[in-house]
Length: 466
Ligand code: 5AD
Ligand code: SF4
Image 1 (cartoon, protein in one colour):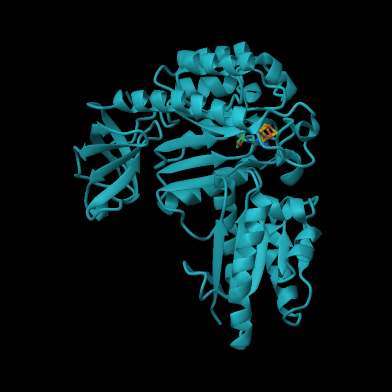
Image 2: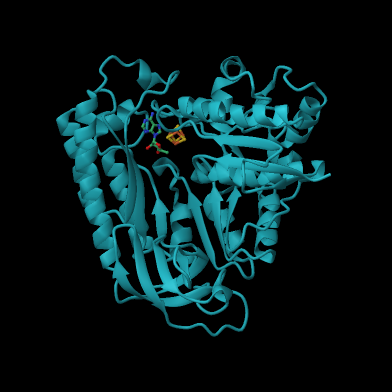
């Protein structure tokens, strides 16, 4: 019997990937994905803990879903409610106390056990207390997960590592996702080949600390990310590679050389620095200086002159003074970002920075954030304006808001709107950029005659895009 599964995904691309995998493992139990929560037999909230008040937002969503669940029970049916992801991991049993209507609370390392958990819950009467699984099992969930079934389309995501051992003092990830774990290279190559066979032209490698990757290679040796990228670049039909999110300390020579040598590795890197002040970087336990970061950027630009950069910033970290913030603005000016994310520091219970006395006033944080965002927005607009008049290869990923419109990504991760027929979805086309806005570009398709999938404008393995 077919049942309907609705997964609401919050947060990062890792969660998007995990949601696809959850749908895959539940398919043998008869669950098929639905876009509507209203008619679902099971709803899973795949949660994220990185933002402020994340847990509170999940509890209010659960409050709303409770009504749907009660209505279903009155009609003689049953709606299972599950909470996955980092909030589930952090809250554990507490979640069942505060939201007793929840059937399943399970952490990011347990998704392969989902069918068993669902079967156990279904075997219980409706209303029995829920199940919690927030273990970090010894076996890897990746080994136990079945091969991915559903195609992710033209732009696919592949999780290559999970967890983090860096312990930045503001961050919950080492606690919610656990220790750093890298998948073996051979299974990654197999999965990537399948993705390409089912329509992927671009693969983005994912991990909380993706460039800390150190997976076991087919030769029995440990491979770093640079080596993995080289092997992936050999896959026929794969036109684009990206990876996110990286830590400056793990930008090793091999990885920088991959940017020099691989045309398929897109000229865009999200490399969070968080702050431009050495004092704050030290307090954050980032274990590098502003100068170290700038030197890495120089080397990346030496290897790949057209590389565009992105970062995350935190303002108002405990103890941050005006001078520290000025150092951040200085670093931003020196680097010149194509885009960036910036946040006010918000304490995460259980992390070292949350216990520091010297917290920054909220109004100061807000002022600093506004100043930083003004600078970053100006840089982003200038970067986008610099694209006008250029011809760039665009991977058309989805339909736009208006009829006849498609949206694609440039090599530099810019969203570009074009008028193009639907048959070009999933293809790479050459587009002349005509207009630039803060968050997107518009352009005109130059070529639309194709002999096969993403053949034309795929950057050649030797020659780089402009
Ligand atoms: N407060 C504010 N921002 C945070 N981030 C992570 N933890 C916190 C926190 N406690 C930001 C960092 C990280 C991004 C994913 O979220 O900038 O790189
Ligand atoms: Fe968190 Fe990233 Fe630091 Fe790891 S490297 S602790 S994921 S901010």
